[in-house]
Amino acid sequence: MHWKKKGPDNTDRTIKAALDRAAELGIQHIVVASSTGTTARKLSNCGCNVVCVSYHVGFDGPGARRMSEEAINELKANNIQVLITTHLMAGLDRAVRNKFGGVYPSEIMAQTLRMLGQGIKVCVEISGMALDAGLVPYGEEIIAIAGSGKGADTAAVIVPAHSNHFFDTKVKEIICKPRDF
Image: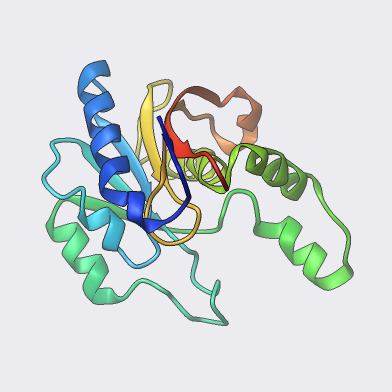
């Protein structure tokens, strides 16, 4: 399924498509990218184990956390786990680039995934992050939901791999994504 354009106008349809596919395949684990909790909140009471992956502390500036404490508490109250940690495809490579310049392997990998759209890159990334944190089971299909900015416009069925075995990640299906990105 392809959306005509990227962006938050696709959020509700993306979540519906993801939940429909989860039901069809019997998938119980959903990982969703959400910087403020707004997109993740839409998955409250969906019947699946939901993990919300947000920006790491410091993304917007030293010590700054984008998601408010109130949003984190609300998500947790709705049985949505919240993961705030270093981005899988940034981390130390980005620090080296910021200090010395150049391009490094994880950034090349991220840019390669962006050939399929920013949302697919984020779906792969947050899946691995959630697996590394022990919030989704190893070796099982999950559904990842992400976007090209605000909201969600991309969903995929993924068997994530731990970051130290990143290339074992399997993108089994792209449920939906924007055609123009």
